[in-house]
Length: 174
Image 1 (spheres, rainbow, N blue to C red):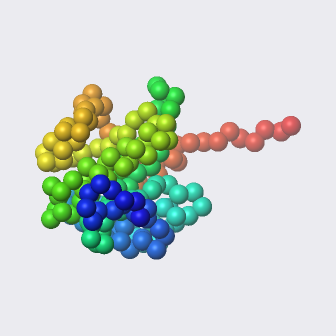
Image 2 (cartoon, rainbow, N blue to C red; image 1 turned 180 degrees about the vertical axis):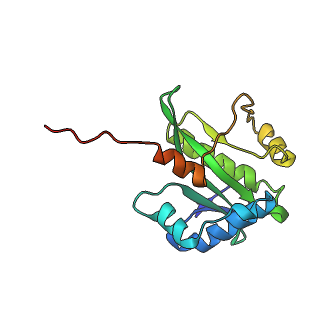
């Protein structure tokens, strides 16, 4: 448990046994973002990808009075321009009835602290353009929109088709 300055509020690093809880929170976030149809993760997939041989991301839980009230899921990236690693915050979620108490700010500040400790040059994330409450919250912390950049994505069949375009060189005789 990681103590915070907020009364009865702690942060906790996720463990492999937390996969059901992680998935439940992912589903809650997807409902809030009006994207529940996009959640295809399972407990088994989360266990493999978050706690397997090469963990792809980290999860921190927010707990108030011993109840989980939110989470942050993040992973490393890299900036060629700065020559340093960065952190990408995939999910920052606090249950709606628990918002406005400083929990989200504390959770984000903790991830920022990890980024600084790891000598990262940036902490980045995406927010849906209709999510005005979150945008206002991020601006209040000093975040700036990267309006000149747009997210591009290959997924599903398009990802498979792009991968199939790679042709390795034919074996050459020595």
